[in-house]
Image 1 (cartoon, rainbow, N blue to C red):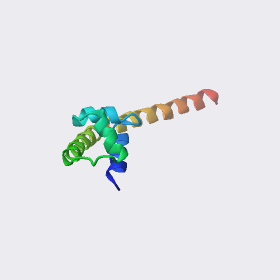
Image 2 (cartoon, helix red, strand yellow; image 1 turned 90 degrees about the horizontal axis):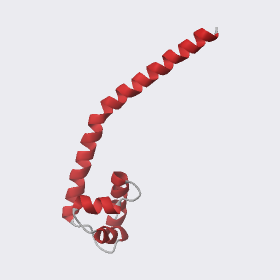
Image 3 (tube, rainbow, N blue to C red; image 1 turned 90 degrees about the vertical axis):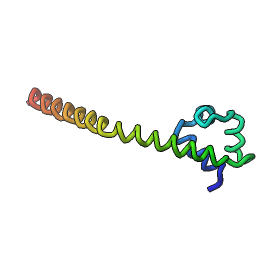
Image 4 (spheres, rainbow, N blue to C red; image 1 turned 60 degrees about the vertical axis):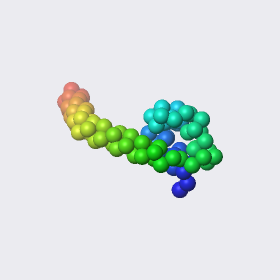
Length: 93
């Protein structure tokens, strides 16, 4: 995969469809530099790849911390649904 495709994939994964501005801010480069990387006009500097690796590591850590809370919220919502279904069946009998 070339730099342009990979930088776009990373950008979209991290910041969504309007990724160039947020990426530029995160890696402390001008937005036009990010556009040049995404178009293939310029190669992505090694320091930018390093910064992106660190940002991805941080994001992964944040998501890993949220996973158990999301699981608990899911379980609680599922339990409420089961209880509501039981009440509806009882009242409809």
